[in-house]
Image (cartoon, rainbow, N blue to C red; front, side, top):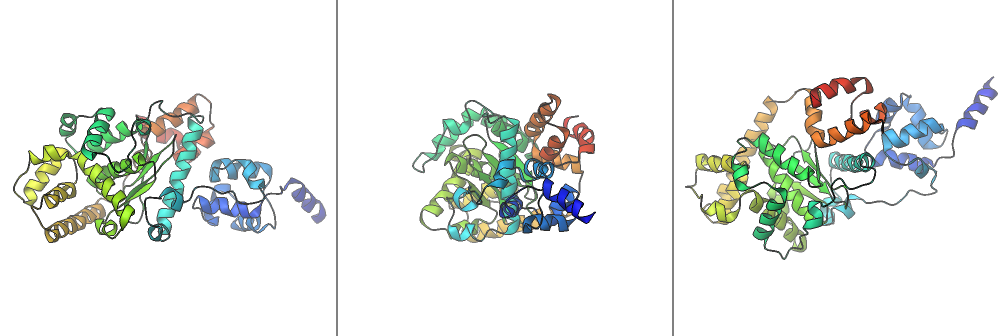
Amino acid sequence: MIGIDLGVKMKESLPVNKEILKWARLSIGLTIDEVAVKMNKDIIVINEWEAGVSAPTYSQLEKLAYSIYKRPVAIFFFPDIPSEATPKVEFRTLPDTIIDNLPPEIIRQYRKAKVYQLNLNELYNSEKPVRNSILNKFKLTGSEDIAKVASEVRAFLGVTLDDQYKFGSIDIAFKAWRNAFENNGIFVFKDAFHNDDYSGFCIYDDKYPVILINNSMPHSRQIFTLFHELAHLLLHSGGIDFRNINITEFFKGIYHNYESLCNRFAGEFLVPAKVFRENILDVSEKNIRHLADRFSVSREVILRYYLNLKLIDEQYYHDMADKWIVEANKIKEESEGGHYYYTQKSYLGDKYINIAFSKYYQKQISAEHLSEYLNIKVNKISTFEHYALG
């Protein structure tokens, strides 16, 4: 009886490369325990697969490949681990010392962003979401007149300063900018990074560039991060927005120039210098708040302008910035929790959710695939649809 069982098991097993099995799991940031839960298997089974003691059946490999690791089945039969882009390659505008020391939670978010790119590739059948994206129209090299480029990009996005003044709240402003980005070929996702040293990052791609925002940041900071990352994408490179500006002040040479360029672009886009000079008020927290509300930006953006115009000194700048960070953290602690489906809707964004459900109702993807795209259980699809799409 034992011999028959072993024979059947060997017959069903496949000659997969155990090293690639392990690499695929690590590249997406999953633990063996998490894979075991997704596969409804004991962790011993997953360990045996990665040790080469046993191997998954073809149906099990299909689930691993398509639903969990987001890889083609064929890759698991390769003799060697395939080469692919890494943070060091994609974040080329940052020093190696920064990339080599990225914390595990940020590496995991990076891999999650790569999964989003794979999902978009599948949902759009390898076609570009828009014919003429913003990255086809503009490219930064570092020698441009930033004010001119920012003005041209604003016109391309179709959001005037008068529109910006009418947003009325930071939340409405973020949604409006996000829609403008996604309507022009750049998808924006959000997540809790569990590391507040990083406000967000972007990954460049000719078809599916993505921006991932740290949802733990104040909403006003999230808006600045959107445009900091847009500048990186216009450089045709991935990049990171660090919460503490002191980090980038220690960058040298070209790396400092890149970060300075991205910060200047974000500031100039959101608060054009020419317009700001017409709105300068006496230095006070009240006036800084007034201008921040007018432009729907963070107080730090306004504070940076005052510093650049030498209306305040470095000490005042850092004292106020530190004070506001403490205030923001307190607000975050008081508001922790929330509704899972609304949170997931915020993380994924309307455009991504709509295209996923559209493919599902056109019977181009299964319920299982839809649940993977949306990170929800199959039996919760209708519930999520109710909250996400009304």
